[in-house]
Image (cartoon, rainbow, N blue to C red):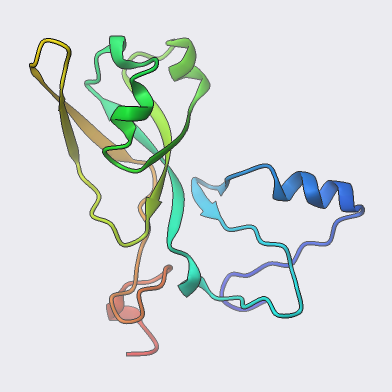
Length: 150
């Protein structure tokens, strides 16, 4: 279908329900928005206000990789989950976290917070994927300079 929309038919209602309840989907580290089809469904990217994205938190001391991680991640977006290597602390170069971000929000390249001693901790934020938004119609998928509505 046009505009990057795909229709998927399931063999059973149970399989459809399983997919719809599974949460966030990414393809090539880019979010896929999954909706149940109805005859009145509007198929428009402009309706998307938030998307999941993986971020890497560099220079985050390992002592914050546990219960503190959702709170620290909330400085970028809404914490969804962390990856297995972060949970098991098997890759220590960075913590990898999925957050739900607004498509039109500013994406900080660094966040900072105070630790238990009152000292400021600065953490570099790397985005595995950044949403591209149109400044003309506020939708996703292209920049304003490439907007067909302009």
